[in-house]
Length: 363
Image (cartoon, rainbow, N blue to C red; front, side):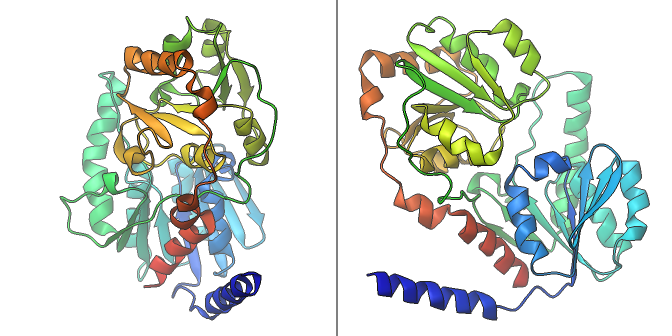
């Protein structure tokens, strides 16, 4: 068996080395995230593969204005006005890789028109849904009505990270390539549980769309039976710490420490109602943990009801509370142990998924 596996590995390595690179020598990577967020997410893995296969990689990111070079990667950070000024630093012909069909994607379309003989590839990893009726939200929805068709129609290829995001109303070349998880890093670890209670954990950026309000309200009367940990930071962190002091707040945690923290808990609760294929769900499953998530977008492509988790209606405090109570009352905690899931390694393994993205660009 060892010899057979080693032979397969060697053949795969030779095959990867023989693959032709993409036709462009340079890539312009356009993201609305900050460099910090990029390097703590799936973006970093994509950039790693890109940087090994091109001469220069330019990363347009949003935030404080600065230019930084790391090897063959140049980070161009700033506002949209700064982005316009940075265009002179970019090659005239390149592969433009957009990560949204909102204003970042619209800027990528501008780059494609400005830099002739360039290809535009869109990776759509979020539905970009704006709920509510505030003036800001209404403006964003109006902008999205313009940018979404503009970006998709001007993209040479589109990559969706779940079937739920496919924009069937537009004729375009697309492929569904799921997010990937590092199954060598995220795996079951024998570690003592954080408490003797039912240990719940929620992870991600702490903003309104993550739905944490509903999670807090669902468990606030059960703190004698459950422990809740929150990993991440964001604009609502201080407000939550003050309003819901019973939870343990970790703040932002380096990626390499997440497997240990996840393994100290029993269930990941992901109440977000705007994500299609959240990596934190894949990471928890890879660690052998059950997941409770909202039944939105691509989550039903990951969660098998009762087998590796449960899906609840978005923003439904009562349903979420009843489910957690049921888990406690029926002593299901001891049964919520998953064996390492082989389908994760075949369908959601990080290296495989990133390589699929690169291969799609070469077609």
